Each structure stands twice: as C-alpha cells, then as structure tokens.
Image (cartoon, rainbow, N blue to C red):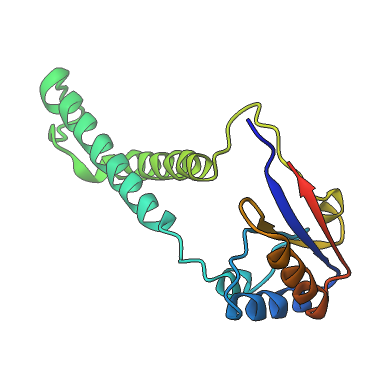
Length: 174
C-alpha cells in the first residue's frame, strides 16, 4: 500500500477556517478533510455536505423493534402458551405497551449505533490516522489530496491557504 500525499493547512480560529473553506471551495478546489478539536457550527454547510439520513434509519429500526415485540408477545400469549390470568383476554394489548416501547427503544438505539459505526468505518482495533496531533488540542486543519497533482497546483493552493489565514502549510504522507 502506497503512502497518501496530503497538503495540510493549519488554522488557529474556527471562524477563519470556515471563511477559508468557503473561499477555497468557491475557487474550485475540493477540500479533502477538516479536523477540529471540537464541533464547529456551520462547518458541514461550508463543506457542502448533505444532511444525514441516520434519523430515517432510527425510525426504521424502531419500527422493526415495535413489530418484533408485538409479534413475539402475540405469538407467546395467544398460540404458544395461552393462560387465563384473572379473566384477562389472551390478546391484551394495553398490558404489552411497556415492553413494546422498551423493545422499540432498544432496537432503535442498537441499530443507529451500529449504523453509525459502519458508516464511519469504525471497528475494534482500528488505528486512527492523525494528520497533526495539535488538532486534538487547539488547532484546526484542512487537508487536500495531492495524488496526481503537479507542483504549480500545490504552490497555488499553498499560497491560497496562506492568504486565507493559515498559520502553517505543509505536505504530509500518511
């Protein structure tokens, strides 16, 4: 596996970072990744990312949990092991509401968690690729993929990053 070559621009302010992303994208450059020490409001809009569909997945997992709970309780109470407890009917929906609610929440929580891990490619034992360790503390970084790019492109992008407020610009291989 060959090393990936990146151009890294380091910023010291989140507002400067968002302003730089907007200008750089307006000039036609594609921003690879942005690393921040804390969530930055408006960053996803500046990068042009589409909204997540995780809430739709949560609804589907919750509906699956509801269906599973009601199906299982109906099967147990009416077919597999019907008992007459104090004259209650075999199909007593109001008494099943708490279990159905808990199964809905359980399926939605586990499903959304596993979906999030899958979409983010997180798995046990994965080693993170940290571009600059200072981005976990107090600085912000913006990276650009340089595979197949010439020196003129790199120089123009470097000068554009510095003009937009980058305190440091360098090339790194991962």
